[in-house]
Structures are given as C-alpha cells and as structure tokens.
Amino acid sequence: MGTQQQTKSFHNLIGREWLPSNSGETFTVINPADTRIELGVCQQSNEEDVEAAVAAAKQALPDWSAEAAPVRGHYIAKAANLIEERTDEFIKQLIIEVGKSYADAKAEVIRTVRVMRFLAGEAERLKGETIPSWDKEVIGYTKREPVGVVGLITPWNVPLAIAAWKIATALTCGCTVVFKPSSQTPLVSLQLVEAYQEVNLPAGVLNFVTGPGSTVGNAIATHPDIKAISFTGSNKIGLAINQLVAKRGARFQAEMGGKNPFVILNDADLTLAVEHVIAGGFGESGQRCTATSRVIVLPGIAESFIALLKERVGRMKVGNPLDEGTDMGPVIDKGSMESILAYIEIGKRENGQLVTGGGRLTEGDYAHGYFIAPTVFRGITPEMTIAQEEIFGPVISVMEADNFEQALEWANQVEYGLSSTIYTNDMEKAMRFVNGIEAGFTHVNMPSTYSEPHFPFGGIKATGIGGMREVGSTAIDFYTEYKTVYMKPHNQQ
Ligand code: NAD
Image 1: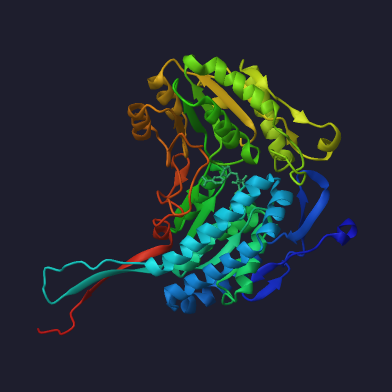
Image 2: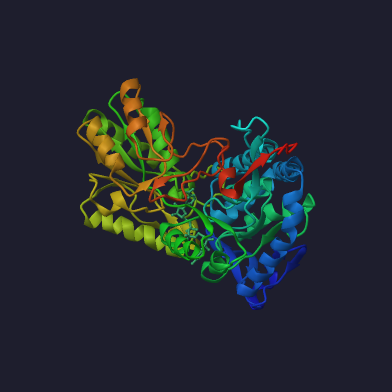
C-alpha cells in the first residue's frame, strides 16, 4: 500500500464478518485541518459487496422482526451506554475526521446517546390501535410491522448522530439494515457499528458498506430487496435517488438542504441574538443543514447589530480544533472549500458588502488545512444568489427588511423549508412568525440549530421528500407498515 503503510485499514461488515471489498480497492480518509494526516483506509466497495450485504440483511430479517420489540430496543440502549462510556474517543474522532470544534463534537455525541436511548424506548411504545367494530363480536386492531430490509445513506456533516438515529429507528421497528456512510467521514460511523457488534447484535441485522455514492449508493437505491431507503444529503443526490426508487415503488425519505432565516425585530436582545447568530452560522463552520445563513434585521437595529456581530466575529479563534480554545475549524474538503469560496466571489460580484472575512486562510498553521475566514455580507436582497442557494460554509448574509411583514416574506422567499428563528419579545409578532413561516421547525429566541431527539425533525418544500419526520415519536412511521386485524373469537355463523 506504499505510503499508506502506517495508516490503519478498515473493512465492511457483512453478516458477522469484517470483509475487504470484492473490488480490491480502497480510499484514504484524511484530517481536513491537516491534510498530511491520514486517518484510515476504507473499502472502495462495489455492487457485489452491496449484494452480499443485502443477502445478509435478508437472511437476518425473519428472526429479527419476530424478536420481542423491547428486546430489540435493549440492544440499542446497550450500544448507547457503550458510546457514552467512550464519549472522549467519539469526540476526538469527530474533531479529527470532520473538523468540528470540541464543543460541537461533544454536542453531537450527547445528542447521539440521547437519540439512541429515546429510540430504544420507542420499541416499548410500538403501538397500534384498538378500534370499535360495527359488529359487537369483532375485535378490531392495528399492529405495526417492519417494512423489511432498509438502506440508510448518510452525509458527512453529522456522521454519528444521523447514522445513529436512522439505524436505531430501523432496528427498533424490526427492520434489518444496509448502511452506507459518506466517504468523507466513514470512520466515526464505523465506530458506531462496532458498538453494536460489541453488544452482540445478531449477525446480519446491521451491515456496513463504504464506498462511492455512484456505485454503493446507487446499488442500494436500485436493489429490489431493499424496501425502503432513508437518505440525508444534498438536493441534487436526493432527487436523483428519488427517481430510481420511485421506478420500483419502494419507500423513500430524504432530508436535504436548508437556507435558514434568523429574523431579528427591533425589540430583540441583541447580545443574545449575536451569540446565537455566531453559534448557528459559524458552528461546525456553517456546514449544518440547520445553519443560520440569512439574518433578516429591521432598520431600528441594523447598524448596531452589524457592529456587534463584526466585533464578535473578530474575537473568534479559527484553527485546528485539537487546539484548545478553537471556536471554528476547517471545512470538510477541497471541493467544499472551492464551492464556498466561489459563493463568496458571487456575493461580491452581486454587490454584497463584505463586513468581515471573505477568503481562505493560508498562513502558518492554516497552510495544510481547508480554512475559510468567518464571513459576513450585508446589503443582501432576496433575489441574490447567496440569499437563495445553500452555501454550506461559514458565510452569513445580513438582509435589511423595512418591517416585520417584509422580513417574514423574505424569510419564506427560498425553495428550502428546514429551520428558522425569530428574536423578539413581542408575542403577537412571534406567533405570526410561528404560524406564517414555511419551515419544518421554528424557534423563538433560540438558535436555528436547536433541536431535541424526542421532537420530530425534518423539512418541508425542497428540503424534504417523503413527508415523514425523523426522530421524535413519528420516526417509526417510515420504517413500519400497519396491519389491520379483524378477529371473531367464536364464529357463530
Ligand atoms: P451528498 O448528497 O453529497 O451525499 C450524501 C450521501 O449520499 C453520501 O453518503 C454520498 O456518498 C451518497 N451519494 C452520493 N451520490 C449518490 C448516488 N448517486 N446514489 C446514492 N447515494 C449517493 O451530501 P453531503 O455533502 O454528504 O451532505 C451535505 C448535504 O446534506 C447538505 O445539503 C445538507 O444540508 C444536507 N443535510 C441535511 C440534513 C437534514 O436533516 N435536512 C442533515 C444534514 C445534512
């Protein structure tokens, strides 16, 4: 393997065995804060590997789906305990593999453990209904049954928590899984799978295949034995998979991009608002589907807000997240960095006024990583490209609306509909915002990124396909079918 001799190799999990790909090929995962550091070598899998994983999942399905649901949930709870015990290990992996700050990495691990515990408990609440019949002899009820073998395809930006909630929901419901993580961040996802191995999850219930979306993801999307696919990622890929899945009538759920508005009214607590704009816009280097990307302010506070924001951004420490005190790390890879820098240039060309940032950081320790200065534009109006398209990087656009009505109109004037927030103490306007905003979830005086595992999560408009939420008590809908039962204990006819 030449220069990769020092780098550890990792395999796919098919049934009970850790196996290399049939392709004989591998790819290397690197640290985005210092691209000289190789973190691991993973399998560049192909269709044959997916075929084997599906066969293993299919073989495991009858026993797993027949298992008592609370027993299934108990495996999830035990795996959550292991992850909690290894919190520091998982934090470190998220830092070096994704480039998250310590605080962001820790938040993802905590969220992972909570979501797994909640979904483990859902196994005890996998309820149907009893329904009164017109016939007094009839007992009528519904029960939930697993949809079958499911394919799970995840993005790189939340590689632990999103994988954890898709896997846990599928397992709770009695489905067996073929899981494909993103090729940028497969290692932390692998650690999650290993936790399930250590709690002796039966062989074949959870299979893990790494490799390119165009082969592995495509094979999952088109495999006739995969009855449902849950995808989180970009709109471009989500829409393409939707076409493939629709052709064969399988079930599809996609959670995709966002362009989340943060509205600040004149009476808002500006210090709080600035802190939350920073957390929502620059946390995880702006690479969150729920990231704050458009800040819509009113004339009464525009100047003071922008001055406060500029001053606060000036105090941010950008760097290697392994260094103590780092607020913001790198972006994930060269392609993302170039795409973000291109959006910054578009913003300048379309006459956005640069308040701070606006380029790559390359001096000293930055030289070997993908670092971009936290960037704020003002003077942005709804038709501009950077007010419309998901940048997925540390870029905030400040838009100055005339009044509340225009702020709400602008907030909705995008194709996406994921998160949103308003800062005000005016309850009447807050309620008008809550009722009028076109988003899957919303907040009042809280960051756009805030969510809890037992609340439904997901978007409307171009953000979501499938109309079903992840996590929360409604998550099980996607992974189960209802069976309606009519029963006459003594047939008297
Ligand atoms: P992406 O669409 O590039 O990749 C997502 C996954 O799809 C990866 O595992 C990838 O390998 C796979 N894939 C790629 N091509 C494929 C194909 N042809 N067939 C099947 N699978 C294929 O997205 P990304 O860059 O990893 O993630 C960033 C995007 O995810 C952003 O748009 C972000 O907003 C979105 N996201 C959404 C949510 C949400 O809940 N709404 C959460 C996190 C991220």
